[in-house]
Every structure is written in C-alpha cells, then in structure tokens.
Length: 474
Image 1 (cartoon, rainbow, N blue to C red):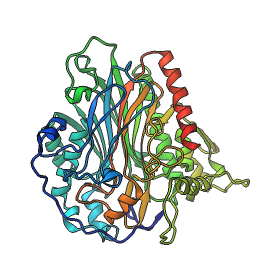
Image 2 (cartoon, rainbow, N blue to C red; image 1 turned 135 degrees about the horizontal axis):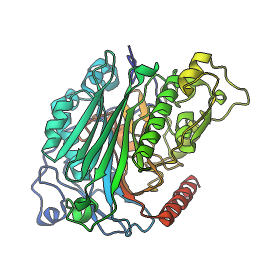
Image 3 (spheres, rainbow, N blue to C red; image 1 turned 180 degrees about the vertical axis):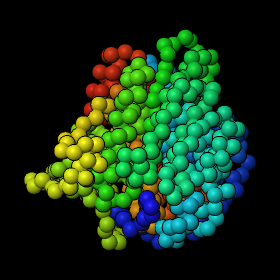
Image 4 (cartoon, rainbow, N blue to C red; image 1 turned 90 degrees about the vertical axis):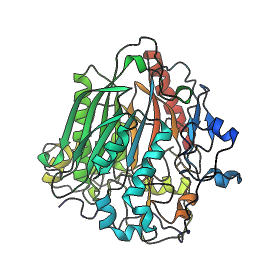
C-alpha cells in the first residue's frame, strides 16, 4: 500500500508550545473599510496593496478582526508582493493557485501530527468553507489541489463561483487524489490527460495535465481593478498546459520520486509540443525540499543520478527535536548540504536506475522544459524566503516545517505577483496547522502569471529572473 507513512517521522525543526486559539467574530466594517474591501462582508479584506500596474488587491487574514499593531500583526496576514520589473505591458494575465488541502482521511489516520490542533480546526465542514473563502480573495482563474478526498464538496462550493473541475484519484487503496479547477468565464478545457504511475511500476500516485484555452473576450487580468474581467481587445489565441502532481512521500525512495517527476515532465513536454508549443505550468506537492537533487533536476533540466544517494534525493531528513531559531540562511545552508555532489558515485541497483530513468543503464537524466520557480521570479521578504528566494515553509505540523510545494512555469510566462507565505515565528505561534485562520497543514501558493508576447519579452524575462535570483542569494 502506497504512502501509508505519509507525513510521518521526518522533520526539519521543532515548534514551540501551542497558542490557545479563539475564534473572533468580525465587527461591522467602517465606511473606509467597506471602500477598501474587494470581497463580500463575509470575508473582509484587511489591506490593499498596489503593484506597479496600480491594481488594488486584498490580503487574506482568515476573516479575523484587523488591529493596528505594527509589523508583527501585519505578518499574521498573507500579502501580495509584486515583481520589480515593469509589468504594465503584459495584458493577458491569470492567477493560479496550488494547494494541498489536507485529505480528511490523512488527517484522521495521522492524529499524532495534529495533537496541538483543536479538533474543530480539523473538521472538514469548517475547513472547506475556510479554504473557499481564502481562495475567493485571490480571485484565481485556475486551481490545482492535492490530497482531495471530498471532490464533490469542493465542486459544489466552487461551482457557485463559476468553476468547473476534473478529478483523478490515486490507484490502490488510497482515497485521495488531485483536482484541477478553472473559472469557466476565463478558460475552456481543450484536453485532459491523467497519469497513473502504477502502470510504470512507480507506486499509486497520480498526476493531471489539462490544456486550457483563455477565452478571448476575457483575456485581461482577472484581477484588474479588483473585479472580474471585462470584454477586451482581440488577442492571439492563448492556451496553456497545466500540470498538477502529488509526488510520493517516502524519502527513502528517491528512485520512485525521480521517476514520477521525470515521466510527468516528459508528458508535459509532449503535450505542449502537440498543442503548438504552448506555455507550461507545473504545480503541486513534490515532497522535496529546495536545493535537493530533485529540485535541481527541475531547475537545471538535468541530473546525474549516481552522484546522489537515492535515500536523500528529496532533502527530507530525520532530525531530533531542536529549539534553534529558523532563518533563511540556516534553511538554505542545511538544505544545500543535502545535495552537494559526493566525490564517490553512489551504488544504484539496475531496477532502481530503470525506475528513475525509464530505461536500464541510463544514469544521466534530462528534460526539455525550461522551468522557473514563480516565487523566485518575484523577490520577497527575508522573513518568509530563503536565500534562494523560495518560501521558508509551505507546510507545518507537529513533526515538520518546510517547503515542499511549488509553482513552476516555462519561459513564455512571466510572474507578475505572488502571495507571500507566513514568517516562521507566526507559524510557530499557531502550534501547528490547520488553524482558525488556515484550512490546511499546507499554505496555498498563489501566483499571477502573464503571457510574454514576443522574443524580447522572453529574453528580458530570463535576464530578470537570473538577476533576481543572484540578488536574493547575496
């Protein structure tokens, strides 16, 4: 049975004692607050940020009462951060979300991971409403979910907001799977293809790939002026390939994890070519840390697998409880040590090589997608990012705090803005996720992407992404 030990035993740091959580009923909005709010009174917005294109946006605070308490209080909310480049020329935009929403079955099987979480915060009826309220504020066009075992519940709730979705459950005895939703006003589904990794001897995980076409009469940003799109000028056909995956958890099976990602990327590249070399988005829970060998394979497009121990390829390590402070430098340094090439070449069995590479005797892997991490493309705060620009943590429960979730995009898409994650000290104060403000033990990754219209856009985008990454590292 696959992933029986999902979410167990592996950690990167410990957390402090839990903080008592009390649900606060929001008071009536003032005239000024009503003016600034971009969603219904049921989910009041707490702050408006303005990007270089002067578009107003709201931040998500879980629907709690806003208090003016300086930076520490501000950090409790998630806020939009914007690209330093001039984005005014990018007209065709959309917001995509990747979110591991914590399967109901997984939450009930692994109660030890949530022993500091009040029972009401694990209740699905409560969590699903909180998740949908949060998503509503981001005004997304595409949603990629992992650990979905209540698809009908989600479909019913999201249908009210104009979404349609497709689901693929894991094979074997598992009850959860992946789901992709799109706002019908913005996109039309042209093609869907699912991957069952069991058919390739790669366990019971699954992945989804959807070709979505942006509706021409709604091709402007879904977030323009804080409203849903208006009729726009005629534009070239805009289609994208969206891939959604939840990779095997087991840290010891780097061969399986690598094989799943390899096959996923091969399929994404093939479909992109078949549909006219369309842009690609890869979203999901990769169960791999930044700077791991698996992360490097995605970022650099190649990997010599014999330079790595298959039991450490994902960067997940077992470590004792520690009260040492967590910082962007310590996170990056620790994770970097996990993937430094060893002078010796590790021993892999023929079967392990076959699973990882797809054929016997091949030890140098390559993929044909030139991918960039969306969060690295939009520099953020040192309180929430590591030195390479990735979030410090996208998941938190009693035995783990770290980053395993990502949104990747091909070079013909440009990241305009992302929603920042939460500082480590704020996460620790919750005692563990889900909380009264956040409906899962993962944080949603949110990015607004734009189509790059010409070769000069692609060249400048690549240069800016490279310089941004160097700047963060320094």
